[in-house]
Image (cartoon, rainbow, N blue to C red; front, top):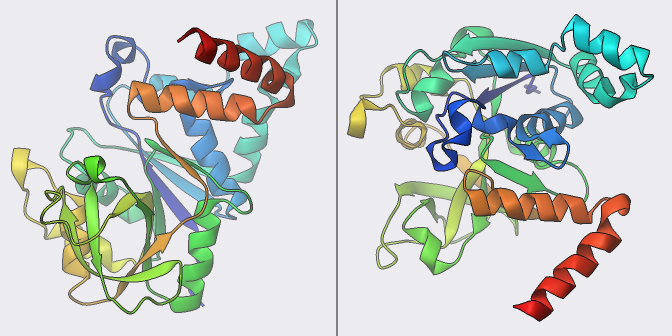
Length: 293
């Protein structure tokens, strides 16, 4: 059985929707309660039994690197105050996964970002996690659930979710075989980027998690740049689909698009409501706000 040992997270995006704050802080470092979003994504990888991580960074990623390597001065200050526990979560994460960095020197699309990690993947299937998508499941993390399906069918698996009509024209939508593999797996026959509602073959959208066979890297190397001279992962997956089956996994749980300010707010409210120290006061505050407006 082919294992999934490496995950890739592209974090070189500029985060223009969050300017001006992202002029000095990478978007993936924006917090969800006390943890930056990137920490939650990496925790998902660790909980999915993946041992290696490649972070595809931009030219200005010192903040990300520093987060995973706290300074000696900070350690000394916290130790003197008996507050070392405040950064224990970082050390726990570091002990469980090997993090390596590759640089995408110019923003040339998601496919190009993934391609930068090729030499660190050892010609094995990889998990790709997009940090704009935070997904909370009640049991095992979504990446683990998808790996389980990959092991069972030995084909690439893409996370999908049902979306309302007003979002269809801004997302990648799948066409699928009318005979579903089972209630959660759909055999994809076509990937369509941002179709009109009229032309959309379904309301199932691609959602930020992929388990992809290693042939994707050779395809990416030969994929011609499209609009804005970018190499897109969707184009490469469409080419892969001509040679291999790809399945969509309709996942259970909550999804938050934290690539938008409103999505980040929703994620913070959701995760705060899961914490006992916040839940009661937060719910009361939200109830009062609802009565006011």
